[in-house]
Image 1 (cartoon, rainbow, N blue to C red):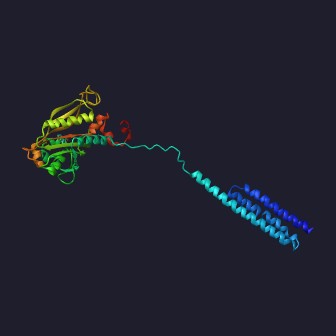
Image 2 (image 1 turned 30 degrees about the horizontal axis):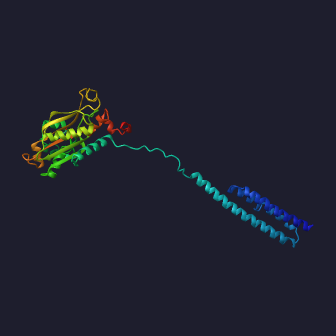
Length: 349
Ligand code: PHE
């Protein structure tokens, strides 16, 4: 009877091992392996319940059954460990795959910025004048009354000051420049008695009633050439060459007599309207012409203030507004758009 019981238990153990191994192979998650453990190997598991019958065996029979039971237990424990390791690896791999970047996906389009229209015009101006031998000269935005007016032949009380009213600082005589012309004096005082060919770009400030074509801050580019035999023909040659390159060859330009205290004679240069080609439209106020710049031969007194002897030296100067040029060139009807930060402005260029 006892022999039969021993055989029976041994069989049960072997069967348990087979069943448990098959079940383990089907456990695909860490959670499932835990359930498997409690089913087969835990204190309330099937192995323990088989071993409960050990009591019915004789003292001689017990060791064999105990040995086999320990072997089965060891085999199953090893199998469990292997299974858990491989499941953990598979789970990690799955997470890695789920979180990985698909490098073949097309990128999100970047909204590339563009240069401000005024900056583009400034760069065009630099390119044209540097090709003609002009250097770019930097001069300050905060100026003295002396440089902005007096040395340019605009003494206190001169009526021309009305045209160039500005912002004043709390330091008497220290103001924001109303034009780039004071840079002429800086350049002359630095280079005299050498010849000069410079352009002076930068921001200027005016006390303006702001409207579609006037801002209280705007750009100017000044030009200055000083030498021994410089004539009005040089002024015309340089500026017509500039207009041809800026607006396209063959566009008509004209000079009108004008007045600036720091040039004599003084002119203004107009260009055939870029929008209507001279027929007349709202941009040119139906005149067919657009005002392009002010210019003239440097006044002898200004030459002197800069350190040049006017009986020996002569020169020409001009001043233009790149914001204006940008408005005309791109057909924009309001200078205030330049400062509103609305990027749609740049879609048309
Ligand atoms: N500074 C003048 C202005 O702001 C322009 C100018 C410059 C005219 C140089 C003549 C010569 O209106």
